[in-house]
Image (cartoon, rainbow, N blue to C red):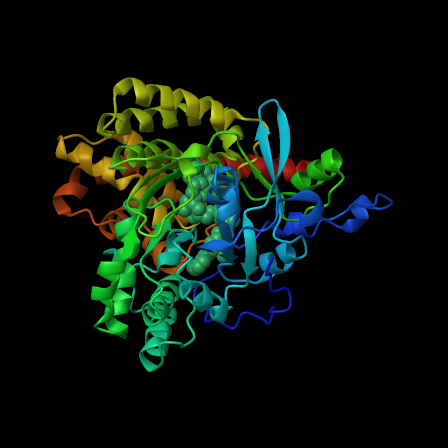
Length: 513
Ligand SMILES: NC(=O)c1ccc[n+]([C@@H]2O[C@H](COP(=O)([O-])OP(=O)(O)OC[C@H]3O[C@@H](n4cnc5c(N)ncnc54)[C@H](O)[C@@H]3O)[C@@H](O)[C@H]2O)c1
Ligand SMILES: O=P(O)(O)OC[C@@H](O)[C@@H](O)[C@H](O)[C@H](O)CO
């Protein structure tokens, strides 16, 4: 196990956006006071007693968040050839999770929370964990021909795209990465596209051979999406690099699914109660999991199918089914449910009004999912069961974050598809109306990498706010005309409901004092 517990100098990488998605298990979980376990000797996980020997590193991962630890790391753990495929994982920004995992040899507990109870499982697939700024280690792996795959979970915002989907070359951190690599191929970088280009420059120089890049974030066409931002940055750094990338890098597209909330002190306590282990890196997740991949792996990959992954020629139908039906309804509940005072997905879906909005959204989206109707209807039913899972405390405030990155890909394609059929679908426009209400201060707090810009759009006169947001979403005059009145009416309704909820909560608070 090559962890780097001592390489924890403060992260000096430029941080131009608020870190709304910390690397780690939530502070609540990690900070659970040891006094809570006072008098009870809890041990930490150790590889010699609790896990498999570390496998040789053949996968590099960027972004050691909860989802990666519940999903790609879990599939790699359960692959039939797991002993051949170790992962070297890098945190996204802060070094905290690397330090903490290093103390337990890279092991952590996945707490699989089903409706009937919680089942802990130790995951051993992380052979090394590094802080985000350990670029020497990153370049070392990229130069190693044995390293065959790079996986990513850095959030939608981490790809540093502009509204057109290309690299956001106006962002200060992106500009800094370009300048650093122009000056020196071993220059210091901080963004994900910058790190991928830095790694690929090293691989080309060392003759490490071809490699596959596998993004596992909830973004449509995520393979081409990463290829584009990396290609943009590569061409600005070294005009000969894009041709090498074309010949040597395979961009794999994926659909990923496993509801994985932030960790809580309760998750850590549950593991301690069941196993006697004190694991601050406990990750809670649901039993359901799905991973659909399309693309080639020129240097090989784990036998992920043996763990339940599916390799297909075209991910799109699976991706639209999941991104619209699941993530779209999540966003709807995050904004419209939180302004009604609901805290979690389970609370929101139990409210008949929210449930009716979710069904209305699904009715709007379903005809545009290119799968048999029966599959879509089974999927909807399964989603309701997953949302109701009383063991999963999935906070609406977590899902609400970074709406500027999510609303355009979750709601807009359906709005456009309905418009193309001459229809305005209120089930779809409500997501936009609820997002505007959220940006105007109702429901979950706004945490967004583009908060200043999108909040400004949504302020002031409601009619002007709706117009500005629809414009920002890229709808032209002809498209806005039929939609704007519907969104405006929905915004007015949600605002009334939200204000009534706030007033009731204040009265209840005053009565308690
Ligand atoms: N949690 C889920 O249920 C779930 C399910 C499917 C897909 N996903 C995808 O996984 C992503 C991560 O979710 P999570 O639950 O692991 O969140 P998380 O907050 O636990 O982890 C996010 C990771 O991304 C890194 N990161 C954040 N902003 C970054 C930036 N600007 N540049 C580089 N790295 C950055 C963080 O450091 C951290 O390692 C989501 O954005 C989503 O696209 C999540
Ligand atoms: O993870 P995000 O921030 O892209 O979106 C929040 C949720 O919609 C998402 O995490 C879902 O729970 C997940 O996509 C289920 O597989």
